[in-house]
Image 1 (spheres, rainbow, N blue to C red):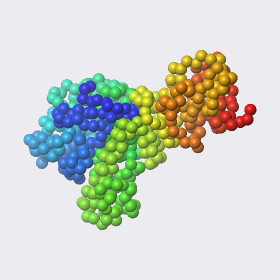
Image 2 (image 1 turned 135 degrees about the vertical axis):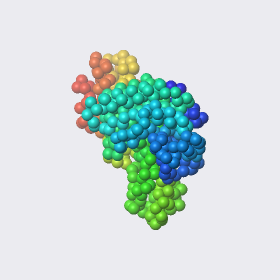
Image 3 (image 1 turned 120 degrees about the vertical axis):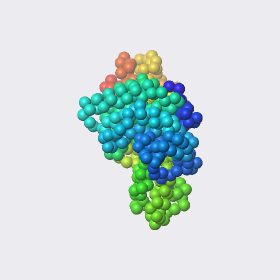
Image 4 (image 1 turned 180 degrees about the horizontal axis):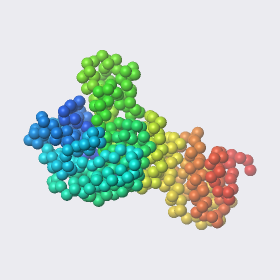
Length: 490
Ligand SMILES: [Zn+2]
């Protein structure tokens, strides 16, 4: 795959360049594709470009295909002229309509050719969006149909237009993984993870994390990954940390229509707000009361613009976090917005091993900001690499205090990482900032590290000098290890 280049990683999150040859543009990722309804434009595509910096948007080719007034103009003038947008334009097929209404009347070949004819830059075949929790048999048979269509899509001559290969498989991790592997083998260009909207609508962020992680196992590092239908800024950081590069949002417009106000911590109702908790131009220039007194159309327009400011603001925040190497701290902080987001974050951490593979070995700082930090990829990596250190000694002191000549060797110990050779004390991630009043999880993770080291060296005599570790952590330390409290008197 040559059209997508990763410039930097943090966890599985990536800063990338997506080259869209037909549009002649390179799109920076992660990014959001605002959904533009060809019939009703809440915010003009030209304004999306000039005011919000949109480099790419998505519109529905199936609606255009079936529209009496727009089909011909789209074919004659092309999408970029019709929508007045010079960036990249991705088109969806009728798959969403298929999921909603159960029937559509175009084939993959027809709709791809139509997308090509109207000047789309990234086209989409008609896949079958299998909802969560269906019987396995149904998920498998619909997946077979989707795979067949991807195969046919790869045969259609689409010139410079990129073509996406949606990944289905319902909530079955093994099907998702296999579907993802098959999708990459088609040689198509962009990988949307399909039918995840029901999970997001039901706040099932833990299930979403498992689905994304399964898809990523199959996709590897090939091509940009599009979380189809993900438009709420509160989950961008989490999805990015799992390796999603593209999001799309109709939320900015749909929510505005219902007087709903997006924030990075969730959604507020305009009626409930006395102050706007936001610094965007809309919220700086107006009060909630003013907005409520406005005509419907004006209010909807202003709310949609606020929603877009928050959405693009969070995309920039995520990008900078990847660049700075503190994406996991951002995920941690966003996870506090809603208990289901925290659940999603905890599910993400159960895939720490997967995230570790692309996580940079060295970053500026590790901030221990919650008990969940003890499960981050860096801690796991430290434990897994304990076997790389030589330990040629009969007696070893593991201590949070100073060294002692009575032992052949002295290692440091630090929560949440556990034991480490002392000459590594000033290296990442052992330089982590951990609060003085830290939590049990940090000690328990350190004790896991001790257990791992002891397991690697069954013949060595270990003594652990700890600074008041809780019993739950000390229970994990193997029986043969002598324990002393740092401040206990001999
Ligand atoms: Zn605002």
